[in-house]
Length: 292
Image 1 (cartoon, rainbow, N blue to C red):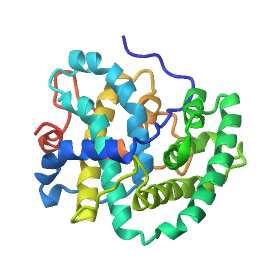
Image 2: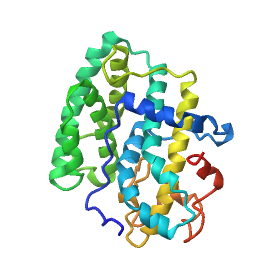
Image 3: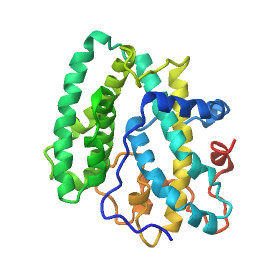
């Protein structure tokens, strides 16, 4: 049976440690290499936020897997199965790109860590208050609060940024957190991970890539296409419930209140309609991304 509609907005998940994400990238490396240059999409959203949203949505999409198989028999379930791996791969590719473009030295670690710690404390307090009012998922806030150590501080900032950004249409004007602080949190979290890697912190190893920008774009393309196909399947199955943006929210930031029909979200509106029962889930080239 499809899951009930949650009462709170979706809860983006904390990104995995770099060394875990590196294994995910290695697992899909050949798939990314086979992408034709013309098929590689521009990175047009915040990657840490997109990764956190995809990781948070993956379990909810997986719950719908039996219903997808039943009602959309020609849908490639590899999209659902590969979603967590593609999200982690995109995260590590992004870290490699940041590492290749950020000139932060290990001597600046203390400054970065101080700001990251301050931001985590403030935003976590704001998230606690919002959770008490039922505006964000309290279990996700509790999970973030459990973090200990520098590595967790970095990943917690990325998760907090994604959680508050995704909830912004609902919490704007109801929290002391500013949009600038929310956006800064993702940046500082990523910078802290890079600085920790350069200092040799356990669990934070980031190995540079030859062409980090191209790899980042390829990994983002694979994640975006697989996630989009999952959203199209969810949109079809949950059309009457109208909870697409609760189960599988858009990877793109919303700068205005959500529409009454979440299925009309910007990243679906420009695409073909959701698949009919027994029909394909979209262009064959999209399916190839996660089926090779």
